[in-house]
Image 1 (tube, rainbow, N blue to C red):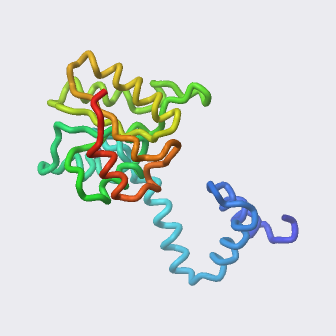
Image 2 (tube, rainbow, N blue to C red; image 1 turned 90 degrees about the vertical axis):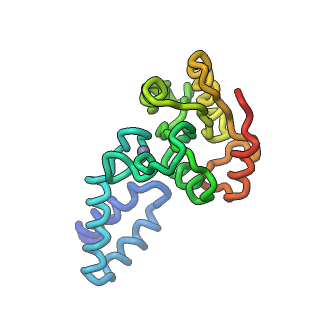
Length: 199
Ligand code: ZN
């Protein structure tokens, strides 16, 4: 990339570190940024820095939030006795978009994957178990993805929770195998939730 000046090359290199952004796209974005009004560029870079600095895990459900306790966990109108376990914050958002789920969540930030060396200690599972021992919970709905990792995680969690006597259920298979929850339409998500089966 010697044909660009150093600052342009640095910008392209930084952008190409983002997922899904190849060399060509990075160049296109870089030149677009260079043509943007400076106040827009400041707003863009400012929001990246401030989100990165201020967004953290909710102390209760581990979702990403800019508060200590996220708006869902601090809402007294939610049913705090029903916890839906999801892999990431985008899955939570997908269920929130349906507007039909009134319980709370627990975000694992990943799934167990022996192939990739991700074990139970690498996801927010301990936090879930601590929560179950200190809160009044009636049901845990496991809504991990329908992938091999998602299923492995669901089985593992259900085996952990069973002895506590808390009801454990798994969302129905309306969600296609290998399907990422965030790409599935709301009707399918709701059907999967309604058709959940006790494990
Ligand atoms: Zn929360």
